[in-house]
Image (tube, rainbow, N blue to C red; front, side):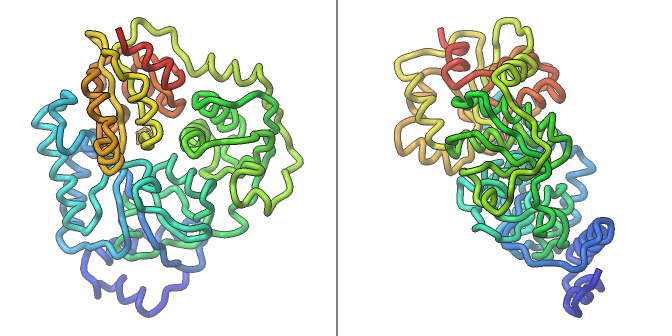
Length: 395
Ligand code: F3S
C-alpha cells in the first residue's frame, strides 16, 4: 500500500505511540484487503465500549492508547454496558459501574464524544451521501451505507479507534464503487408494513443473501425507523453491510436488478416470524429501542403508556441516546413513561448490558435483538410491534 511522506512519519512515531500503533493497524488491514492507499474519513463510530464485552484486557488496551492518543475527527461511541448516569436504577452493580466509567474516561481522554449510541446519525454524527467514514456498529454501518449513501466498511473496535487517531482508513470494500454493486435481487411480494415486518424481512433477506449485497424491489414505502430496524436485522442475519432498495435508497437507481432473483412471499415472511419467536413463558422483560429509539418511537411509547401501569414483576426498558432522551424530557414523554413504571436505558441496551441470567423471557420489536438476546443472554424472545410489546408490560 502506498503511504505519503506524512503517513510514513506517523508510522515512524512523529505523532506519538498511539498514532504509530494506529497507523500500523491501518497498514496491516490495507495490505490484507489489497487497498492501494489511505483515504481521509470525516467521522468515526467506535464499537466495543461495554465493559461486559471488553473485560480487563480491553480496558488496559484503551488506557494505554489514551496515554498519548488523540482522535482527529468527530468520533462517537456505541452503547456501553450501562446508563452512565443512572445505572443503579437498571440494577447494574457499582463494581461494574466503576470499570465501565474507566472505559469511558479513557475514550474521553482520547477526545472522543462519549455519547454512547448505535444511532449516531440521529444525534448529530451524520455524514452526507458519498462521504467516507469509519464506523463499527453493524446496524449503523448498514443504515448509513444504504439509506444515506455514505461509505464505510464495518470496522472492528481497534480499527475504528485507529481510523479516528489517524483520520484515515484503507480504501477497500464498501469505500470503492466496485465494492457497492448489488449481487442478488429480492423481489418482495409480501406485505411489509409494520416495524416487526421489516425485522422479519431483514431476517429472510439476510439469511438468503449469504454475505452478498441485496437489491430489493417491491417495498413501496419505508420510514426512517423501519429502515433503522431493517438495517439491524438484515446484516445480523447475513447480508453485507449495504443494501439497495428500489425507490427508497439513493444508490438503487445506479444499478439494474441482478439476474439472480429470490422471491419473498407472504409465506416466507410468516416463516421468518416463526423462526424469530420462541415459545416463551410469561414475559418478565420488555426491551424497546434496538437500534436505539428515535424521538418518534418514544412518542409512540408514551402515547400507549399514558394512564397505564407496568405490572409487578415486569421490567420495561426504553433504550435510547441521551440527547434523544433530552428531547423526550422537553416534550414530557419521559414523565409519562416513568410514571407508568418504565425505565429509560440511555447509553446502553439489553444486549451489551450485563444481563445474562437476570431475565428469561423478553419481548422486543427488534429481530436483531432476538438474535443477541438468545445467543449472548440466553433469553427466550417474542417479537412484536411497540403495541404488542407494551401490552405484555402493562397490567
Ligand atoms: Fe443498538 Fe444494542 Fe441493538 S447496540 S442495534 S440496541 S443490540
